[in-house]
Image: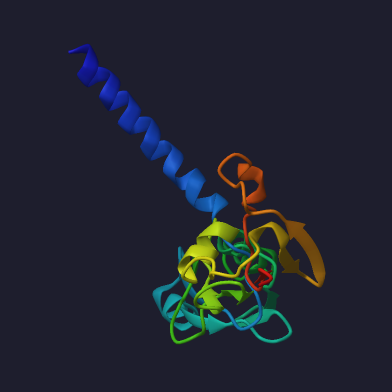
Length: 188
């Protein structure tokens, strides 16, 4: 009986922890991303007009009915939801709108990291939240026969970082988490 009780409590705690874990893996929005926006707590006709898929412009914003341009770049979807809700409240358009924002894959290219050299299948790799250098190298077919993992370089935002990937098992801190647009160079 105690085992069942403990299992029930553990399952309940895992359910509570899931939304927190999901929020931590959200990626900041960037120009060109497509977002799916739905709004509730407002008249149905207005909701039908506002709820749709938007593309974030090169200037980093989306254009919403009744409030105009709203900056979207740099915000995570959950943050943008609050920004949009506050824009409608601040302009006194709606009293209590409820906004939901999610990234819409559509036919927009995926976020990528680039394995430049040193792997069996060099090239772009689809980025996933939480992806590490070793995961990207694995997706790229693993190291080539002539790769020098000890001299790996990570290029991020114009800065180069040297990483020794020979002993990732004993030095897990060397398996750095990637960000979209990172480049991995393993000399041969």
